[in-house]
Image 1 (tube, rainbow, N blue to C red):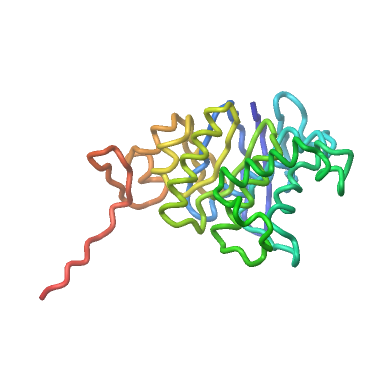
Image 2 (cartoon, one colour):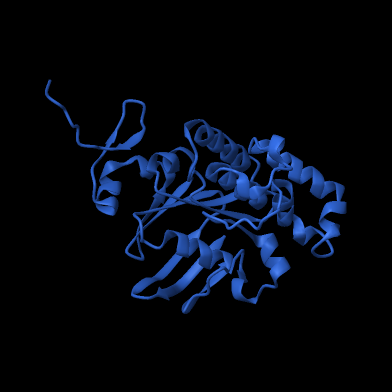
Length: 258
């Protein structure tokens, strides 16, 4: 379980919190409009950012008292973006996620048969095995997103945090991502994902946590992400539910006269 107690983080004029919440094992989707603090909350949980006030417990342990290797076993973060260093191949990048299993950085990660197998499997799961030796910097934005996901998966942490995992993905890769995350979830991996896509959240999440202006405005079941009455005040736009149960924004129809 992830427990946030009176958590506060500040950046410029923006204040996230105070937040008090519990994220149960399973899959939780954090949703909300741009600038609501979703990615910041994920970074605070991962330890990439440090709160001004409050405390985070990861499975009952103080997050701020964990050594780096112990933290790597508790939390894996897949951020939205990365700045690929020149010359780094896709396989090398994903292998970096295995550092906690080796005696340290360097050859130890590559010498392990288990780590090599984990990297191959992760690349196959994100459909990038054929590009293992391709330089990371020349991959498309969508492929880099999948590479980030693969690196988080090989870390085999108790909690995997995904910041907009569907960003830059086309329809086919988005569908494949949903299938992959469903399989990962079925294998018992705990997922916390940030998304603007309420339909995606409703399809995969066990629970949702909704932020607006740095505050929690709703917590509930994953299926609640398909309820227009809940989404409307959060996003300040209209939604409609299709006959198949999907939730979609209600766009104004532009009918051109002929």
